[in-house]
Length: 602
Image (cartoon, rainbow, N blue to C red; front, side, top):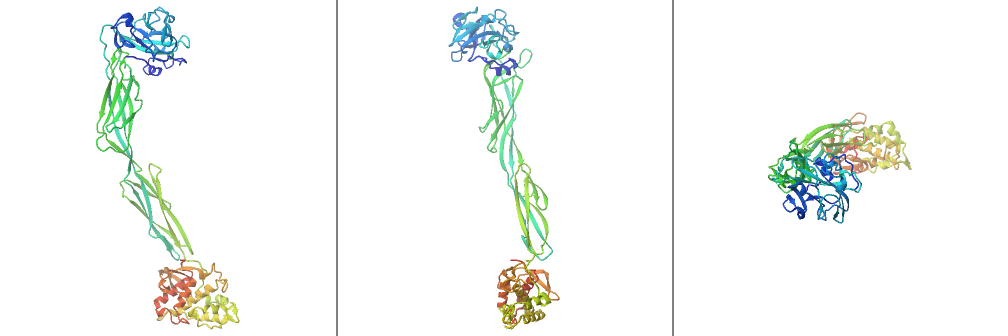
């Protein structure tokens, strides 16, 4: 068996000093010790290949230098050889403590050349068949009878560096049985684990999305639902520690290195595991640990075992024992797997409410959070409010959100005026100052297009129109079997609002923000008006759907509302909606809400 080491391996087993300077011209190829049967006869190689590389000899005199087979021979150049005691690799020069050759001759007597695989030598040592006899050299102090052959390049001159050399170990053990080395043993741990990652979703609901209301505040109730899935399995692996034991020791009970050790690890399903530093290792301690890991595509179905195999090559140990090539194996049965939960909890927050809480696997699924929010109703128009709930997982950046937008609407701002305004001096002044055509008041002509107001004279002056308006409003009354009088007064005020807000009709005399006739009104939610003193009214606490008074329409413009109501009246407004007071009241409330600016936009 050949024991030959590169610098890294020699350092690993403590055979040379890491402080030794690296050389520029190391030896290439290989070097061996062997026998020369053509000179000494047969039977002197007790272990190894006598034609190329012998490991154990029955005498010091039978050891020859052999450059090895031609394909592995040291390269062309000049060399010296020396026999060293184990540990002498750090300094192979003459005078070094472990040089066993310099007691008998100088390094110049051990110099040879190689050219094309042929050795040239003229020194005092025996030379035959391309081989040089190593003797004379001193006995090794190694109790196992181990020597080291050094072949060093002289390309960088003399003395040589340890890194300029190659080494081969051999043993002299005359006439005795070689002591066998002790095989390595192995044990291991095996821990299975996997990740279960939970995915979360979030939803947000609200009891209503829009509120139309006059004054006060609107309350919305939100519900946030957080849900997780069953979890996704990933990151399945088996890992652990492999412990290899080297029982080989020297006379001082120190561990003897074993080189060329390979460690492999395999699962029973055929999965190969990665062993850190598991190839070509030198074991210098009684126990050497190797960590390993194997990745799986998923959780195993059934029992899973784990087997480690440690193998080594045949080698001559420093204690003189011959360790045969071999292998050791250990199986860890029935690996258990531990679940690592990822994102098993999530934190839930809300843009309005703030922190809602933490939800974890094992809680109700889904978990709900409910809260209410009161929002002040604007005086006019609508205002929308966004509200977003968000979850943030506790382990990964996973997040999600869900939102709801609610709208709070006050009445539409039209600039309309009440029946009280149109009978007072300000309203009367606008009417009486209106334009006329050939003495006939234009506002009167415009009002007469609606059947309820056709009792107004077709030739009325603006003063007469003013008086007509005053009389209709004064006659407003909701008592009795019908509501014709009150309905007529409210519709009249709405018609005047439309006429005197339109620059194309009577001019925008009431300074309305827009032409009132074009404003669309929500007929599904009309304030149930409470009539007051002086022709004013207030919005009550309830709202009614007045679509029934307007052919089922859910919304109409103010101009369309006037036209439809007029179609349900006779000339003069004494018979309306078939004299059904409930329907008349729906129409009245619609005009009343428009006039008091408490109607909602469609």
